[in-house]
Length: 437
Ligand code: 5AD
Image (cartoon, rainbow, N blue to C red; front, side, top):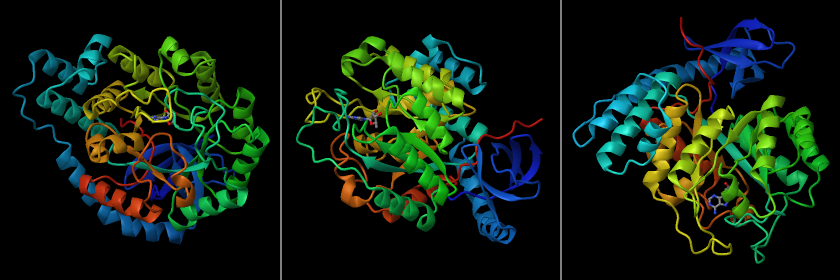
């Protein structure tokens, strides 16, 4: 998906192309040597990924034109700030007014917002977050696909159903043919422009195997590839970049080093962060974040997590609730409230109002059936659909009863498009706007 709208290149400055869509201009990195001014292109996550024949581009633009402006109107209506301020404490109103003026909030102010509990105060926080999303990023919603290629994992993460704690799980590793067939279906049949290839830290899958998979996928399809294979080593990150990967999805899980060490015995937050920093340095788009509601985690920790994602210049914030899995040491713990997850997404928007893609995660949809709608109205603007073949999907048990586990790609797309349409969002990833003036 990411039914991308083709844009036209209006300027080229070294590696940076300026691409215009219905009067809006965005910047995208270009790695296609033959690109020239006037070409129609698809861009994803700020990268030019494909040149389109002009006729094809104009046909697609013609079908989009009317819908695009209609959607913008719906979004505009839903993003108005009109809200009952009764029931909202003066101090909170003051903080949110400051957020609306896009003045940076202090830690204490952000923490107050993260901890809001009354429905009126939370509603106003979400409205402000949604308004800032609308104002800075417009109605584009980024919808990536995720393909889970292996459920083998050497790690012992205390919360995860794929960890070595879960001895009873029947595991799978997709063959190259199966991976290519699944990518082909997602890209050529369903139009995904960007895919995350994810797997556990599979001891029987070498870096060369992963490099080969990425290279082969890239050879067959002009898409933006995110890799998500855990801590593969800094050199491996370099090799995967050379093979064509341009995004890394790797959560730091928690920014609290001692909590990290407790939940991942034998591993350190430092190594995790070294991967994220290296990825940034290599030019990867970084998608990262943490788990909300881990046992022993405080509200301050969650705020630190959001601030850490920002300081890592995350292009995508991936924050989702911890959901206990029965075959792990944390089986008897409770998940967080849906309100805390929404508060986190909204605070993330306030922390990074202009750039962040903020994901509504499948874990959040598992916790709350209304999550996608509520999250998108509280500052979020991204979704990830599962394109793993159904025969494997139920075996990728990060946590129980995952939302959409039994849904075909077609069903997920239909539901997503209908939700996005009702909210006035266009399922496109146009990247960040070029500031006016
Ligand atoms: N609940 C929610 N998310 C989980 N993950 C792993 N286990 C759980 C769980 N029990 C998330 C981790 C990991 C991602 C692939 O899945 O944050 O980074």
